[in-house]
Amino acid sequence: MSPSIFLTGGTGYIGGSVLDALTKAHPEYSLTVLLRNVPPTFKERYPDVRIVEGNFDNTELIASTAADSDIVIHNGNSKHEGSLRAHITGLLRNATAASPRYLIRLGGTSSIADWADPAYYGETNPQVWSDVADLDDLKSLPDTALHRNMEKIIEQAAAEHGDRLKCAIICSCGVYGEGRGPGNTQSGLIPMYWAQIQKKGREGRAFYANSGGNTRSWVHIDDLTQVYLKLVEAAAAGGGNASWGREGYYFTASQEWSQLELAKATGKILKQHNIIDNEEPLKLSIDDIKAMKPGKTTFALYGIYVFACNTRTRSDRARNVLGYVPQSGDLWSYLEGDLMAAVRSEGVQGVH
Ligand SMILES: NC(=O)c1ccc[n+]([C@@H]2O[C@H](COP(=O)([O-])OP(=O)(O)OC[C@H]3O[C@@H](n4cnc5c(N)ncnc54)[C@H](OP(=O)(O)O)[C@@H]3O)[C@@H](O)[C@H]2O)c1
Image 1: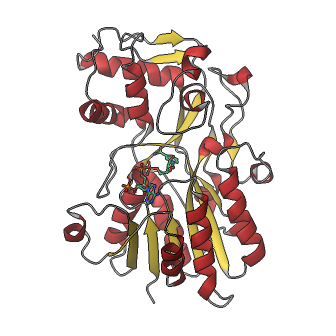
Image 2: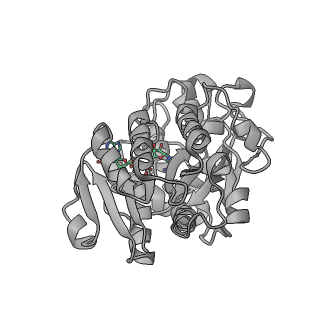
């Protein structure tokens, strides 16, 4: 029987791309989405997808919808504890060992970012995290690690109810490429970079700190979507070869690049488009980076997290158990498109 799937964040960059991929690859799946704003074209584009109108604070609505679902794919704001607990509560209502339910949650590699260690600000940290070899370390990250609160909720649910609730965390690195969903189609990191490049005092120059050796893992949105598809297909097949529960932790990386490499490539593209005058990246102080407040977060060191620290991961588990083979071109094949999309949507604020 085709599974019933409840997906959140369907208007988001990642959740929307997953929604789009699922409807195309598996029109036989029964899909329900939680939407707080329904895009005007949604019903025309996805006539067979059921809409439940609400937001992440509507916990009983989330729980009752999850209770009627075989698989929950929870995207969107990956730090909202109440919605995650509601999904678990709901899934457990009808889950049995003979008929387990599945929860796939979007996390992020900010979980392993070394923002707490100033020795690596703007420098390369040799540690590359594997979701197989380093699993014990991943499961004992300090409570101060980003996402740790959410991961602990999943770990506890898996430990207490693992016979009837199969959980997995897709811990994605930085994503690039145009999204495929009905809402936001831009990833966060490149627009955040462009927004900071334009700020007063930076002369419209791409930037880095120290040696610029701090390194980030990246994945194209279509490759990330493949990880989701394979995991959902495994769940639909009763678990398949996938890892669930404590081992259900998946990095998605296909490549990694340093901040200096990103800064050089960004400067070159912006100059080619006559958006800035000087393509040479600017070396900023750590204090300058610390003062940056990219995105909507309240995390005080978010500037460091985005521009000056390391998030290096290897997608060993997805490759081993899901047969994941990234297919898309690398970041450099898509950076121009992503940057120009950011420029178009945010505008040029006097960078000449
Ligand atoms: N993009 C990346 O490179 C990346 C990598 C790893 C992890 N992440 C994390 O993954 C999460 C999603 O990323 P994204 O790039 O897909 O973000 P996004 O494009 O901003 O999408 C967020 C989605 O969540 C929904 N949402 C947020 N808060 C909600 C609430 N209270 N109630 C109902 N819906 C809510 C949004 O709905 P509306 O359309 O109504 O606003 C939207 O559908 C973020 O937490 C991000 O930090 C992102």
